[in-house]
Image 1 (cartoon, rainbow, N blue to C red):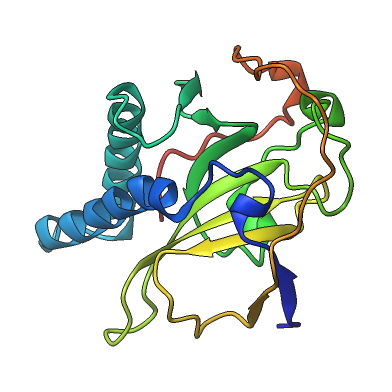
Image 2 (tube, helix red, strand yellow):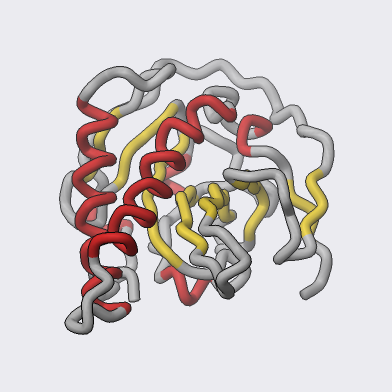
Length: 206
């Protein structure tokens, strides 16, 4: 893989600190471990485990958001299986897959009008995902990545739940300072379904 230069999420949205990202990533990993410990019978497979992981993560994230215990304000924008929540100006979801292959993540396509609070360019993330990364061998451990993609679904922001970056050749550069603009409080409303690309809702991690 070609070396990719990525910025920390907080370079684009200051509220996306390590503490905030861990608030969601740690329970996500706990669910993964619990499911693999419980669903290990001869009647279980990647499908049964993947469905359970998705369902439990979906329910846990709703509880985390509604508990109001997050270090920053979190707003649940879409409670369907599309599941979108907002921190600051970042609209966030979760999935499983390889962030270097955005097509595998089935990312939604947003139009720039959904993000008219920013002067959108190739360096501006508009789609944010917590991504479960399963171990590829018994020696590895699962981890969670938090990735921001631009309008072309190219990764431009990156965070990982542990510091041992050994899988993808990433180079985190110094935080950038976005151009300062005066904004009112973010508008919290239901997503405009007309601005989403049609897609199959895959409610399982396979």
